[in-house]
Every structure is written in structure tokens, then in C-alpha cells.
Image (cartoon, rainbow, N blue to C red):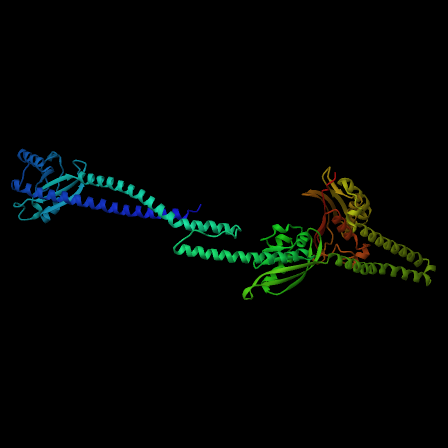
Length: 594
């Protein structure tokens, strides 16, 4: 959660006051402590010098007389009095038994006094267990052969409680002053910040309404200074913005009406290839809601990489692009697409617009015509030419040949049978191309359908030395037209048996998959090259034409399988490795009827 400007100013000013008082308090605390300590030291030094004049000249020896003397001096001076001999021995002390006290020769205040005449130190008293301020004065007169080290010393000491009490009083006063100052600073800064930020907040509220689309609102009641100038500039800007928006909306409605009435699909993307607009035809063609596509990438909207690539090239190269696009979703379509760059200021590309024209029906009609004429002519010419050649041979005398005559007749009958197979497959393909119109789907027991197909293919498999088997779960069912399902199984098994060498294996299997049921036929045959995989489901397409014809295929079996799968709303796929075999998979979706 962000903090408002008013609170930021209030807290900043209050923090500044707090820091200033903290620094002042720290300074006063240190100053008072130093000042008080210095006063006590000077007082002790003066008293120590007076005491030194009243004491007998050293050397000193412990005695009751000296002990009574330091007691009297303690009462008079109000400070602890200690007499230290030249060797550091405590001769008398006003607050402790001198015989139990350790040698004071190493005490810093004594060393300073011996060297400089007087010394001072602050440390904890081992005897009394409190912090003390010590002042020592060297006694004039006797010493060890004139050395300062051997001089006797009179020392006065006072606890630092006075300093502590002064510091405590100062802290109390400063604490109260700090509290009063903080309250005053808070109130003053809060009120001052409010007077400064209220016009800003008013501008913010107006700006939010403008951002929400209210172009009639204006910033009013802001007077004096820079904020008044800012409000005036803001109002003028909103006026201009309202005019531009009105003109833009009018122009947008004009162009939107034109685009919505177009029968071709239109898509507009920005320089980042994000969709900005699609018309209603585009939504119908790609099965999307036009209101929800803005800001998405073209491939996410259309599920088509070709369209996305075409628009990307138009943006990147800055030139018009043209291509043919194949759609699979929501239904197969062929589109002629043109993408042109949108040029903005300074000749910069700011996006692209794509125009897509549906030529699916035209292409289908033309392709069907060309395929039928070409493929039918090609497939029928070979057997008819063979029949004619055999008939002419019989007419020329082979009929009377006891050996050749019957052989030629058998070949004519075989060729006529092949013609019949081609015509039957062409009729079957014509029927399945009509899609669901002729389908009668129902729930079919998989095991029964597999057994029926295996019984029919068994003789051919035995003749080729191929082992055929099936795999499925007990109780499996597939929603399909029974006759069409049998056609699919027979075509796939027939191909697998024909192109699997002796001692090979063909497996017919079925399995439940998400959304439906999948039938697969796997073999250990010759396999299919990668270049041919995309075309094997075309009518009359053969990987090896001479071999296929020798095997007796019509070239329509896989095309029939594909159209039956698509008529059921499913699909067909193939995986193959040359020399290792192939696996054909047909997916049948679950039906809505049970």
C-alpha cells in the first residue's frame, strides 16, 4: 500500500525534528557529564591541596593518630581521604581498613601525582565496589633521595553519583521536551502538509475520472502559485483530448462499419505482433470471440503459425507479404492471405493488417476435378491397356494355343477383377466423402469387430507367412458406424499384410484415450520414408508404384481410412521407420448418443 504525499511530508518533518532533538540530547548529555565531572575534579583538587598542608610531613607510618586525622578530614571535606606512602602502601583511609587494602603504587592517579605534582583518574573502586573520581596530590618535602617516585601522596575520592544524578535529571527534562516537540511537530506538519497536498489530491481525483473516461470533468477551485498553472494546463489538455477522442470515435465507427460488412477476415496487430482488432468474419472463420482477442499473439488467437509468421514478416520487413494458409481449426480451410505493414510517423512500422480470403470451396472443387480426371485416367488406363493387349493376342491366334490361351484368359479375368476393385473403392470413397450424411454410428464391441476383421484377413496373412494378432481390453467399445469401422480395419490390415515380409508380425490393437477410442495397426514391414508420410493418405498416391500394383493395391485404401475417420470427427496418424515397420492410428471420438 503506497503512502500519500500528505503523510510523507508529515512523517518527514516529524522525523527531522526527532533527529534534531536526539542529536541535541546526546550533545547535552555528554556536555553535562563532562562539565559536572570537571567541577567535581577541580573541587577535589582544591580540597586535596588544603588537606596536604594540614598533614604532617612524610615519611608516614600507620598509626591511630593518622587514622583519626583522615576521619576528621573526611567529615570536613565530604570526600574519602587516603594517605599513600612513598612505596605505595596505604597508611590511612577514611572509609576502609588500610591494612586490608592492596598496594596503590600502580594506581594511575598516584603515578600522575608523583610525576606532575597532582593526578586524576576515574575507575571502579575495588574496595567500595562503586565508580569513583580520584584526585591525588604529591606531598612536598621528603622523598627517596630527590626522586619523585618516592614521594608520599594524599588522595581524595568522591563517587560519581552526582554526575549520574545530573545526567538522569537531564534525560528527564529532555524526554519531556522531546515528547512535547514531537506532538507539536506532528500537528503542525500534518496541518501544513494538508494545505499543500489538498490541491494535488483534487487534481489526482480529477485525473482519475478522466482516466475512467469522464472527459467532462475539470479541475476547479485551485488558486495561486504553480498548482493553479498546472490546473489550467490540465484543463486545456483535457479539452483537447475530448476533441480528439470524439473525432477518433467517429472515424473508428466509420471504419468499423466497413470492416464488419466485409466478407473477408481482417486482423490488425501492433509492432509487438499483439492483436489489436479482428472483424466478425475473422471470429467466425477461426472460431474465436472478437471481444476477447485484443492483446494476444496471432498464433494464440488463430492457432495457426502460418498467419502469425506472415504478419511478423510484414512488421519486420516493412513490405507487403502474400501466402496461402491452411487451417485445421475449427474446420479445414484454405485462405489466400495478404499482410501489409502499417506505417506511422517518421516512416516507422507501427504494426500490420492482414486480409484473408477463403478459397476453400473453390480449391476443393478444382482439386476434386483435377484429381479425379488425372488419377482415374491413370489408374484405369493400365488395366484396360492390358486387357486390350491380351484380347488382341487371343484374336491373333493365341486362343488356339493350348498353353497360352487359358493363361491369357485368366490374366484378363484377373485384370477385370482389379478394375472392379478400383471402381468399388472409388464408389466407397465417394460415399465416405459425403461425411456424416451416410454414417449410422453406434457403440460397437471392439473384440467382435477385431475378430471379424482377422477372420477375413487370415487367409492372405497365412499365404504371405505373416502372423496376425489383436489386443484389446474386455468390454471395450468404440462409437462408430459398424460397416465403416470394418472398412478401416480391413484396409489397414490388408496394407500391413501386403508390405510385411514372411515371418513378420501384424498387431491390431485398441485402447481408450481421453475423449474417445484409438485403433492401431502395427507391422514389422518395410516402413515408409519420411518424405512420403505427408502424402500417403492422398488418393492413388503410392510410395512405390510398381510394387503397389504388383501387390494388387488400388491406391485408395488409406484415403478411404482418412475420410472415414474425419467423417466420424476423428483423425488418422502414422509413425514409421524405414526397414522397421509402421504403426497407423485411427482416433474415434466418443459420441453424444448411447
